[in-house]
Image (cartoon, rainbow, N blue to C red; front, top):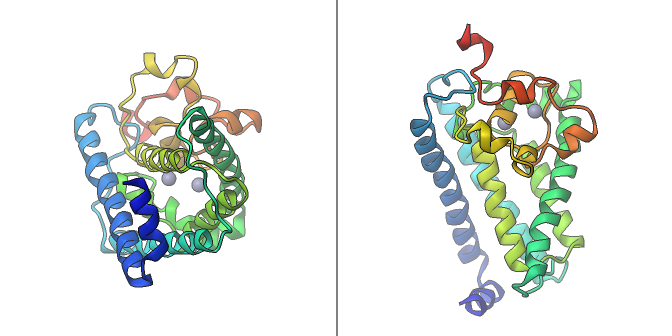
Length: 253
Ligand SMILES: [Zn+2]
Ligand SMILES: [Zn+2]
C-alpha cells in the first residue's frame, strides 16, 4: 500500500497530482469545519470566545482560496521530493516518534517568531490583520488567513523538511496534529476540562483557551502547539491559567 503510493507519486502527472492534492486539502477543510462544529455544539456551554458573527461570503472565499494555495504548496513539496531536495525515511519505530516531537518543537519555535514578526505594525496592517478581523473565532477562522501569511507558513514547512529528513510516518502524524491543533485553537469553546489541562504535560499544550486569548489580546500567546516559547520569551498572558476555560469579559459581565 505504502509502496504503491510512493510509486504513484513518482509517476503521477501534474494534473493527477494536482487533483489528488486539491481533494486532500479540501478534505482537511471539511474535517476542520465539520469536526470543529460538532465540538462547538457539544461544548457550547463552555465558551471561551463570544459567539461568532454569521459567516460571510468573503470568509468562505478566503478559505477556498487558501485550499488552492495549500494545493500549490503540496505540489511544490512533491516536486522538491521528486528532485531529491526533500527526502524522507521509511522507518516506523521510535525514530518516527522522535520526529513527531522534533517537528512539533521546531515548527512551533519558528512559527512563534514568524507570528511575532506578523504582529509588527507594518506586517500586521498588510498581512496578519485579516486573521485578527475574526476575534470571535469559529473553526473556519483557521483558514481566514491572508494568502501571503499562508504561503509563509507553507514555505517554512518545506524549508524545514528540506533540511530535516524525517520519517514519512513522523511527518504524517505531525501534519495531522498540526490540523487538529489549528482546529482546536479556533473552536471558541473549551472541550478540555481544567483538571486535565493542569496535568504536567498537558499544561504545556496550546489549546482552545490559549489561542482564543490571543484573538482577544493580540500581545500574548503567539505559540501554536505548546506554551514553551511563550513562557521562555515572556509572552504568555499573565492570567492564562486563571482565565482557562472562562468566557471573555464581554459575555461574562
Ligand atoms: Zn487564530
Ligand atoms: Zn496573531
